[in-house]
Image 1 (cartoon, rainbow, N blue to C red):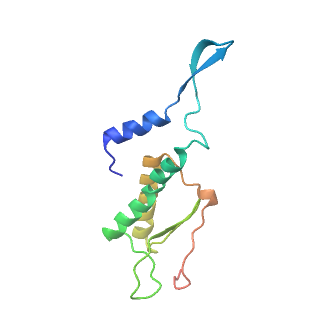
Image 2: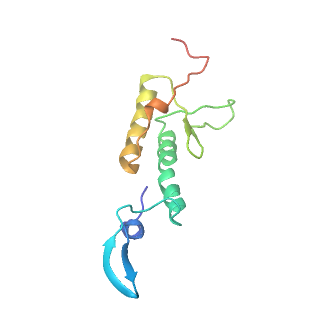
Image 3: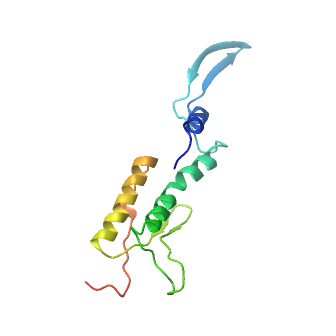
Length: 134
């Protein structure tokens, strides 16, 4: 997504496991590191989610701008829609052609590599317009 190296380093320092020390009878004991890293409820979590969640829409917009993918239109005069994002779902629009499907697959693969999130194809569904023939 084009973030500066210094910014990325700062984020990683914020989410890397912290070091803990136990106080017992007012005396500091040995220290240890957390193995979990960032956890649900951490104040930084929503911001990291937004950074990661913007990757797929950015890839879809870029593919649309480069005319590698055409979205859906509700009318001839309407803008083309390539994707709709929800809290934990997304709808991708593309051409029903080998090229269109391959572009969507490339976008999803690039997103997986960059975000380390994988698409669960067992929970995914493909729909075609009623105008599509076999």
